[in-house]
Length: 344
Image (cartoon, rainbow, N blue to C red; front, side, top):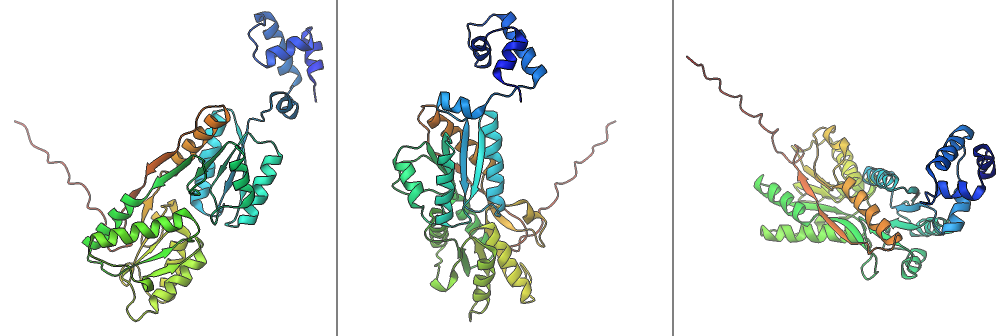
């Protein structure tokens, strides 16, 4: 591997001049810059990132700790984070907490030991000690999707309250009155928020949410299957199951099919967190879509602001309802054909 001394020798210049060219210093002649860049290209020279980070106290690297890499929502979020970071000149190291606070702490510690410049976290189970210590110590940090109340860290998230209200209005219009929810973990902000929004939307239509119609899930498919089986065993099963995330919705769909029932003929199904798979299920699933890509990009921009000494701002973006056929709605009617008028 070529060194900076090799580049200097090939260019016929000093190491100091080569260093100034590589660091884009203005006090370099066009001729020197051309010779250095030609030598860099010919030798395949790559700057030593570790040495540079020790000099500048920056690694141009961000850490991202997500709750569950198997969840398509977080996979898409991670992709948008990586794309935006790359566009801004940063690399990303990703850790999967698998909804475990101890594993989240492990990733936070490992990332900080690698001298990352800033940290994006979707907190699992209300947070973890190492992450909270890092936030309180002033580590540049941004919460994305989930957050921890009382911790002074910018939050980039979507607001699903209006979309949940739209969903309940849609279900009410279709004649559904017995609506149940598969809730996420109560220790997470998203788990609590979606139940509260669902209950409030029901009350706007004069409906209540009985305790029997609240099933405790964990954002995993198996819990969606288990809770739905419990709903189906009730003396008066719900007419609609609303899963508070996409994986629990898939589990609910499995449970319904295992009983020989059909969606939406026997029971309707809706989900929070739209995913591409939902258009391929039978029937396609009505879901609340978060602006996942924009959330990831906004989170990176807020974190880079903090890393570079600017105040990173919290961002809240609206979610939206995507109506499909899993709640009993018909396929959208095709637009009418234009009327052709003859001319004379």
